Length: 107
Image (cartoon, rainbow, N blue to C red; front, side):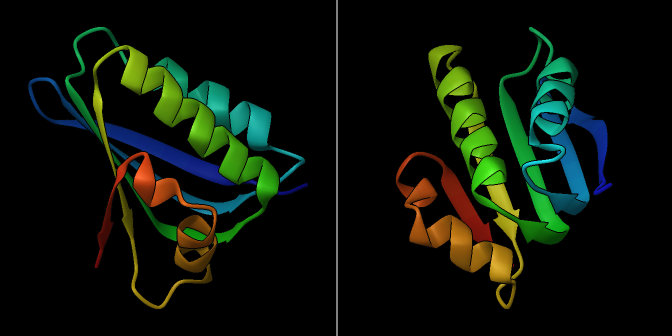
């Protein structure tokens, strides 16, 4: 079974930072998506999703990110996704055009 670690902290009031590590694929994408959405409270004005520890992300994981982006856009909550410059996850995220929907920060 694949696993993704999802850890959140409120960096400042209204700003939630979520760090993801491991893998997000068909096997766990739904539970990953639910976990992230549970962490985002009504107090959130912005969310930073740090994917620096993510080793693998497939199409189901990308779908979960698009779903999250759409939900937060409806709620008028800003979403920023942080990716390492040399990450294969970064290439997948850029290839599908997620950067046209959310802010991407390449570290």
